[in-house]
Each structure stands twice: as structure tokens, then as C-alpha cells.
Image (cartoon, rainbow, N blue to C red; front, top):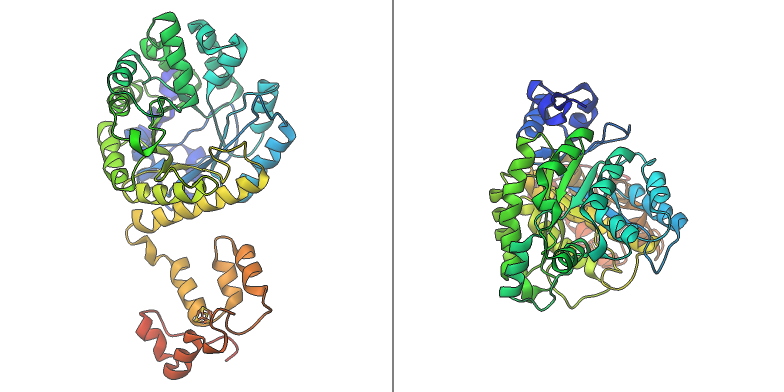
Length: 439
Ligand code: SF4
């Protein structure tokens, strides 16, 4: 493929026709989307080898969510992973990452790539499986696997290019309680330490960009040094890695390769905003893809809620893409129910982000109409407008169908105020007057 065919470069002349649906989905002018992609502030990870529904991630776009699926060495059931993938898409996932490390990795990926969605992978996982252990992954094997993923149609690759000798030095100089918790990060540390060599993804970064440009695949610059607990959030390794990612992000943009930045793991809530703004600043406002952030370490089983609190706060400060955290995070490989619950909660966090990212997004029609429906005690409308109406209906109806709900029953404040003020109650609430259902 000639470099002039790269999406970033094509967008300098206007929005390519195939991205019309993406602009429409965002409610963006095509020219604005094209400018965002050309400047690197928006990414549309889309491998030209596949035809599928793409999405835009970045400045001015709605917050997107990714759901990780994939087999492990302990639990390898490809059929279950496909069910999880479908459950994620049915509940609002915008992208899937196949993190499989067990079974026939090529065959599993082939099935996932048939789904009508954006797909990402972490090639070093497969390289380690093929080599037997991380220390035996050669540079040639790693680049071979990366090329195979590109060729097979993967849209974005997480590559831990910033886990270099300098970051390793920082880790040693300023030790952390949890060391390295990123799987990819730990593999690259093992490779560097065992061979006493630089990470090839860093030392051969230009060659890596050539491969990605050849297939027009997006790089997601992995945060292999992300902190694994609140106590590690302020340590040096993370900051050293981010500075490196800032430089690598610019080189990718110059090479016409779309890029995203990953970050920042576990961190206290009051550090989330500052970190997000700092990463955005040093990476030229590249789209930011967040793992978490997990804002407490003592709620295993509810880490999806913990991540949603951190994720919404991060979106308020400019994060663009949230990675779903399931209730089984830190505990086990998620099952289908975990994926449904985690996806829904991540989607809510993303929506909360949208209510403040877009100019007064909380004034959007759906939010206003929900207030109307609540004021009118119009339960059907409430279920229609809810992000997950079936779930809401199940809760409301478990005590039988009634005009109010069973919380206050005959002492319903909404009903009483409606009776007292009639349509004037709407004016008090600042919303248009409406009729109560059944009147
Ligand atoms: S019964 Fe109470 S909780 Fe339920 S709608 Fe009325 S005021 Fe709200």
C-alpha cells in the first residue's frame, strides 16, 4: 500500500466516503471529523482488509467503550468467548479486544474478526505463547506476529513501545509495591532483562511504523508501567513511560499512523484529572484509552463500579475510550454475566462522561425526556428512555404494576406535587409543562 493511501493523509483532503456513517453516528460535520483524524486528535481504527462498522475515538466524539474477551491457559472455551463477544456488542460495546492466550489463537481471532465491530489485539501475548516464555521471544518473532495480526484484519494493536530500558531503570530506582501489573509490560521487562537488550518495539520503532503503515493499522501505545495499586500511582516509572509515549505518539503521527495512548491503571481519585490532562498535553491530544482507572483497591467483586467512578472522572477531564472492567476483575476470567454487567456499567460511565464532555450534554433530549417521563409517572416512557430499560422494568414491576412505585407508595412526592401544582409543577422543575399519563 502506498503511504498516500493512509487514512490520516486522505483526511487532509476531506472525509473519505467510507467514513460518512461514522460522521453521521457522531453527529459531526464530515469536515470536522476529517480535520480531527488528520490532526491525530481523533482515531478511527479500521483495517482496510475488513468491512465492518467503525467508530471514531477522540476529541469531540462520544466516549467509546472496549470490552476485553479471550481465552486463557486456565480456561480455554472459544465458544464461550464468542458468546461473551456477542453479549458485549448487544449491551453497547463499541470495540472488542481479543486477549486470548489459550488454544488456537489464529482460529479464535479469525472468528472474532468476523464480528461487525472494531477489534484490537496484543500481539506480544501470541509471541510469548509461540516462544514458550517471554525471555525467548526474538525480535523477528515479535514483528512476524505483529505483521500477521495486521494482515488478518485487526484494527488496532496494543504495543508496549514505552517499556524501555529507561523505564526499567526508573522502576528499579523508585520501586513499587506491585511492581509491573501489565501482562505485556511484564513480558517486555523479562525480554529486556534476560537478553540485556532494549525493547525492540522501542529500538526498532521506525520499522514497526512501516509495518503499521503498510496495513494502515492503528497503534495503541500500551501503558506497561501503569500502577497496579493506589500506593504506586506517584512512582517514577509511569511518568518516564508517558514521556516516552509522548515522543512516540508524535513519530507515529509524522509517519501517518493513527495512534491512541493507554493509561493510567490504579490511582487515587484526586489524581485522575491531573494525570489525564497531563497525558493529553504531552501526547499532542492523541485519543486516550483508559484501563480503569481503579480508584480503590479494596472492592474486588465490584471493580466495575470502582472503574466507572474513575472512568467518568477521567472522561470529565478528556479521556476518550474506556476499557470495560468486569465484576471478576482481579479474581477470575469473566463469564457472560460478568461481561453483561461490566459492559453496562462501563457504558453508563461513558454516558456520564458525555453529559459533560459535550457542551451541556446533560441538556440532551433523552435526559430531558426522562425527567419529563418521571414527572408524569409515565413508566413505559421511562423504560424506553433508560439505557437498560428491561432491567429497570424488572425492578419496578417486581412489586406489581402501580401508578407510583413501591418506594413511597401512596405517599409519592411526585404524585402529590402534580396534584398540588398541576402543570405548574413542570415550570417549577424548569422543564416544559406536560400532561400526566392517563389524563
Ligand atoms: S413513589 Fe417515591 S420514589 Fe417512587 S416515583 Fe413517587 S416519589 Fe419517586
